[in-house]
Figure: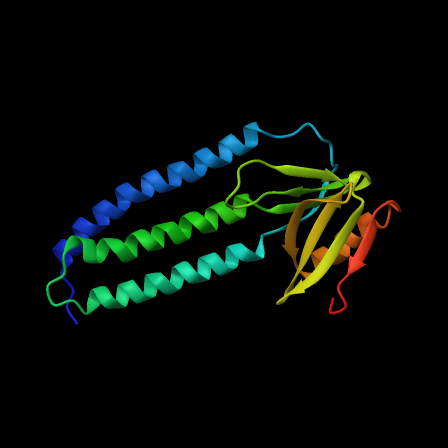
Length: 184
């Protein structure tokens, strides 16, 4: 195992410049999403939920980081790029973690706010506009598919506590049917 401190310092400089661009892009996306807020009043937020797919993406990026970090340490004569690749993957992991914290689903008193990691904008649905929701188990989470006028309007992945809060809120609107998968 060989570690070149000078080349690593150059790689840190490149990773620093890359991180400024990446985190700037993440913040710009958040500001752009905030500008597109809808004028739908969905009441006070009861609970926030981070999308389950965010965890999967973060774990995948961390695995790639560890693989490339170990490979870079086993290079006999490493170049700057050898150290930059794992550092860039680590920056992207942090970027996704920050984006996931911005893109939370909000279960509110009068509706639900859906924000997706790879789509811009905010989707706010009032409970009284929902015709049905379908609940399916998804590993330790539940996939909730929301239908307005019998057309899919959105989906989210939430845990049992968040599901219970959502169902309690939707039970106040008898026009919305709750469809449970047999396993849920």
